[in-house]
Amino acid sequence: MLRIKPARRTILLALVAVLVVVLAAGCGKKKEEGEAAGKVIATYKDGTVTDTEFKKYSTFFGIVQPQTEAYLSIPELQEQFLREYIGYKILYKPLSDKKLSDADQKNIDDFYAQVEQVFANDADTKKKADDAGLKEADIRHFYTMITSIMKDEESKVTDAEVQKQYESTKDDYNIVSVRHILIATVDPTTGAEKRKDEDALKIAKEVKAKLDAGGDWKELAKQYSDDDGSKENGGLYEDKQAKGWVQEFKDAANKQAIGKVGDPVQSQYGYHVMKVEKRTPTPFDKLSDADKAGLKQEAGSAKLQAYMTDELPSLITNISLPKAADSGTGTTNSGTGTDSGKNSGTTNGGTTDTGTTNTDKKDDAAGNESKTESK
Image (cartoon, rainbow, N blue to C red):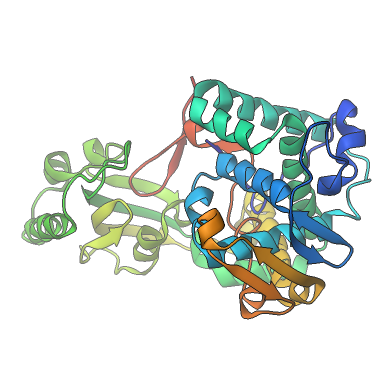
């Protein structure tokens, strides 16, 4: 599946020439022949959202971010998602007529090529798109809308805000060497249960006891570890940036005492028995250009989140999502400034990934990503 990254690796995309007329009007474009206008489910300053339109947007995000489908099964989160979509529509309106470059055009074409590949390889996903009436023009529009907004927010970030963002996340840039042995609870390929949580923890404690007693990391990693990325190397990840690891593993790598085997650390993969061998901070002036660009994008995402939380609620006049009996998604009727709107944050702009595919990356058990070719 496709995974979008507007927050961290923003790609501004151009509209294909033949789609300019259709897409320039945004999601309020003229309906295509035979397309139902749909029922209005939300109103806001200067606009509305219909159920047909929101279904397309939700399906789009189900393609680029598969967990969206489960997310939208929860009524409160469905409303939050709708509110954020309204926020995107409002922010995109003044940007939609801006001329985009040839490079932007290529990026959107490349992105849509990935979508086509997904459709070709996954009949179920293609059917969902067809059932929602999600067409090429819609996909290009939604992707352009999100990435254009993120680039605009990023353009407002000052050098001082980049520095501030670094100060709040500086441990992410530590360079760490760590050994670990993973006792998995799930199969990393299929997600199926590998062993019970309590069984994994019991084994992890046994491994820690053997290491504390002087056991050899290389032998024990080969015997016990379920992390194929490190088990043949004594469980070692050497001189890695902490930011690349999943949260729990990263926290332990940044905080655990150097040279000591810590208590088992639980992550989505299972239990990690870890020893930090070396940890070196990276000063701001030693960051790579890519790291500084990432900090700028994160600061831009924070600006977007602040807009969604502080400004957007007062612009929404009504939300009327279907009742559970009608749609299976619960009842959500609210006016301006409800609590759910005030606390919406951003589920899309702040946390997702741009222009990469899940099938193009293979995650190791600590959360690193290594590039693999997509077949």
